[in-house]
Image (tube, rainbow, N blue to C red):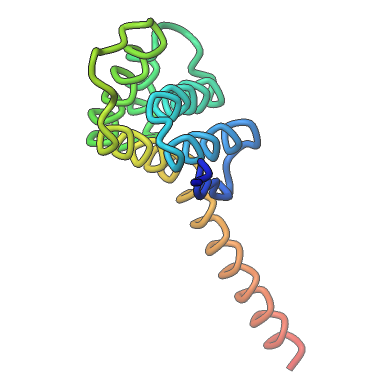
Length: 149
């Protein structure tokens, strides 16, 4: 007898708004149990929620992705590839299910693209701000030491 799923991977998604982070983690969980369509649908939802979180609320997802690029939230290559998430997610969301199951490598790629968007929009900037804060605090401590010496 074998139990399914064998191993559910649900990573902790840091420096991302809570509901977006939970949904991204759930996309990974779906991927880890071979629920590929679920993973892709959730990845699409994460991209749209990310745009909305930045005030980009009008128009279809294609326009939201392009606007995220215009606002310098994502790089050009990420903008181009984000449309892969949109297209894959749209097929599922609109019930255009192919006769063949979704290939695992397609779902893995789409979830990786979702991760890249979260990295560019939230996680990378949060890391840079932490580094900047640490540097400023060090400078202040050094200045205080010099002033007190």
